[in-house]
Image (cartoon, rainbow, N blue to C red):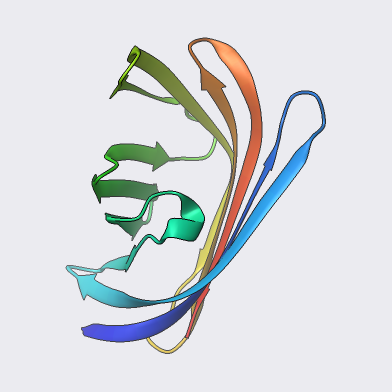
Length: 138
């Protein structure tokens, strides 16, 4: 299966000092199923600050991976109760990012589905706050 879908993506960030920021994006994407694994992909926009980047979620029984390629590259694995660590090169040097998921939920179908991720984010060993991502497609 490979078909076009409409995605509603809502992201929020709560910093350690209690400041809340959120973003909402409606965009076209693709839903693919390969070997029993659903993939949702879309092109980022200027609104997200990642224009020129493709984001792909792969939803498996034991978790969700997110991979970005293009002008921004990153890869994260969301498995409830397991910390994922990645290093990323920036113009100022390498930074270490740690993601600790507290919620990994998904309901997927060929016509409609959703993905909900909530996770703690640490950068270079310091808490950067809590993030939540809600994605719905049809």
